[in-house]
Amino acid sequence: MERYGIITEKNPREIVLLRGRGCRWRRCRFCDYYLDFSRDAQANYRLNKEVLSHVTGLYGCLEVINSGSFSDLDEKTLACIRQTAASKNIRQIHFECHWQDRGTIKTLRDAFKALGVTVKVKIGVETFDALFRECYLDKGIDESNPAKIAEDYDECCLLAGIPGQTAASMTCDINLGLKHFDRVCVNVMTENTAPVKPDASVIDVFTKDVCPAFIDNARVDILMTNTDFGVGGDTCEK
Ligand code: SF4
Image 1: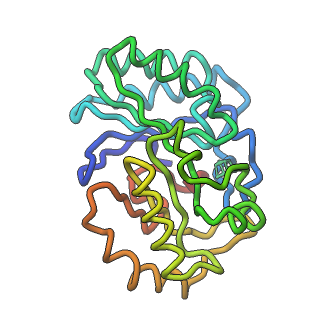
Image 2: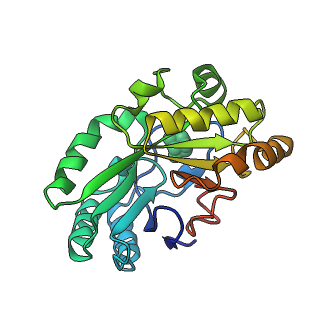
Image 3: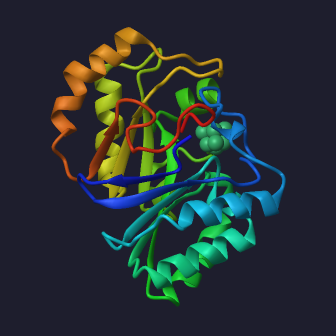
């Protein structure tokens, strides 16, 4: 599995896929990303340290993802990320955090602010249709107001290409994301072992009727496959 990549378009940045102790939620019905985990903190740290050693700082911007929230990473890995940011002159760093872990965000921001590094935190919202999101996808966000969801976050991930979505619903989701967040990342569903499967006809609608309106928007990343950022692969579907 690739764990280091370089994103050259829109918001250029380096990206690392690290390994933590695993997502605490594990209930999203479209996801088996959480299979990329280990309970062995020392083994995770060894792996993550090696991955972080590839970071050069060429854009001064780094995205750190793991299968879960940044708070699922061990302390030594978090220290290694701070050291890497300081030594490679990283000025902006992006992390992911589940809604139910949002209480950990302020401490993270403060720790990097002390180094002069701005933290951007991304939440997987998948859709702003709260009924669909919670009753069908089981995302675990007990808030339906997009403005309130955005309060602790800078960026959101949306999911496209699943049964029940339409051009109107997917467009509405992206527009709401752009209204309430700095940046939006649209992940087109890729089949994995989870119960919710991609719908080829919905992906077709997304490709023809939704994607063209946002493809040139500098605030929107669109991942047609789960490895478009250059990381991920066999085990991790993120
Ligand atoms: S989508 Fe994220 S929060 Fe949901 S189960 Fe997968 S890793 Fe956990």
